[in-house]
Image (cartoon, rainbow, N blue to C red; front, side):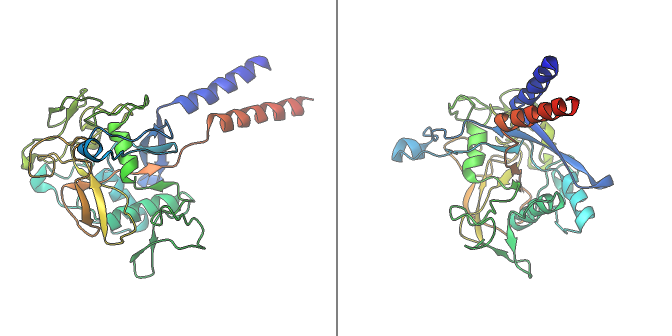
Length: 319
């Protein structure tokens, strides 16, 4: 019994300490997997390295809870399979002139609204509450007081949902932060600009400054990792983040393979927190993609309690 208890407790600890969580979504031939990275250190101090922090004392990226964020950007294959499963009719940009439409390329040309509907599909198809509210005509709405999952601090996201688009703060923490609480200038865990590459996974590299015709790299081959373990936040494609109270304008973050999505050709860094603070939510831009986030898995205490409960049940049955 003692050996079994130790094994079960160790199993729980390994599950909690794992840096990635893989979720299989969809059904049958249309199933696909998304790998998430756990972003811990809740209640971290915000980032003051950028010019907003230096000039105004503005700290950004403080998040007071643990969450998970996609290790990679959502791929074209995931969208194709979701469309086949539920007839979502999410449209993607034809990237023939930008490197092709490979299944593992990031899904681009998707509006914020379509990204939100894809997230809702992930939730509803797995038995969870939809994250975002659309009326009978498909028009995006905010959640209102009295509705299940309403959160006055974030009226866009239903608090009962499991999957969602990362907020700007959640995205920023995963990109520029670290488990130690330190902040870095670039989303590769470095204060030195990453080396521009067309693809690859070497440390302190990013997919930027590439020929426009080359297009983005595969989502799983899009540069070095952040210190939390995410890929592609320093380039590849600009990413949608969660909207604020305005139902027509939303934010984006990160940079693209062609420059960084701005007038100057440098990798995204803490001096440029968002690519756009006021983007149209219906924009279908070939340089825009997205990744998703997820609520955390059970805590170590919960897993240990489950394990010990199982041992108690086993002992009772033997008695």
